[in-house]
Length: 487
Image (cartoon, rainbow, N blue to C red; front, top):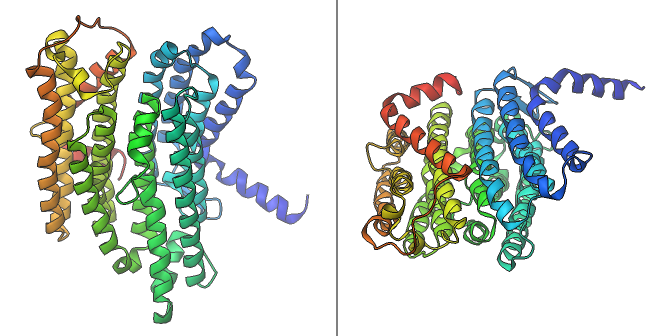
């Protein structure tokens, strides 16, 4: 073994402890495909769901136990941000897996590949949360996204699912090309020396004025590429169709875990790598945040599909969370975004669990399917009402505290206009959320009472309890987030 190979091997062995959760996920996912696929017959494939949940639980423990540090030629960093956001990715993935078993059983679409793809995608999300170099960010994004392209088109016998997957893939490939081109421009602007975020920040701050257009173009292209991954306006075109066409558990996954990873990457890229050239991206990002709030909420008003309503709602929530990225204090911004995202994952997973439960009864696709739910199933309707009112940010529910901390931070940093816009669009969101509540409580029910039971009901109950408990401890949540994950 020559000196270079020995040095590379030593570096890998020295830094492997930083990525144990990712290695564990990829190893298990590979074994699930073969020889794990031979363990259960086709009729028993549903057993992979609880096994996958166990794998996710072990992953969460590994994330909390991983020591902090930087490695792999400074391409990956484990710190508070890297520990906090991966926990949200694991939580969102666990919710999607738990909701998958019954639905895939009813569709007779259980396969081990489905759960393996979720694990591979999650490993990409965990890499993305800790990536500290533009190259590692790009490869992490692709590992995460390629698996989700396949999962969106998982129901191959449904034209809407295949169409959604194709649209998502084509637009995703286009945005990845823009991202790579932006990285190449920034590499050139930095003198062809580095793509490490910390070094890039210093190099870009020292670039001559003649290279200012090159830096601005590169920063803007990276912003476009990453804006697509979190479905921010105007890079949201794929989102409603993908949400509606994908299997509903995958819609739940897309609305939660990849957004958490994408926002973590945006916080690190713009808070670390582009902090010295903030004048190049603050104004464009402000427009993107404002446009996401406006279009997301206004477009949701006229939707008759529950999944499309939640898709446009998620676009609006991304706009709110981008206020944290605009913060001049990276730590405070990350803390507020993490808290908002944690609350959002619980609310959104609970809402989609109700949708999936109704789909099991042949309903749930349209908003009118919620008609009279308050009389047929008062407990289920109450939980859905809690989720929707919390998503709207109506006090004293915990969703209000998430928005309060973000808006307070934005005002302190001087973004008064954006904060007023956020408040106004939140009022618009209350209109369409209350429209669903009106269907449940003020319309006559159709059909017979729906029998209770199943995993989705457990998820609904657990999410509702978490929302109510979070409501009771809302004023202390931000301090808890700082102490546990982002210290």
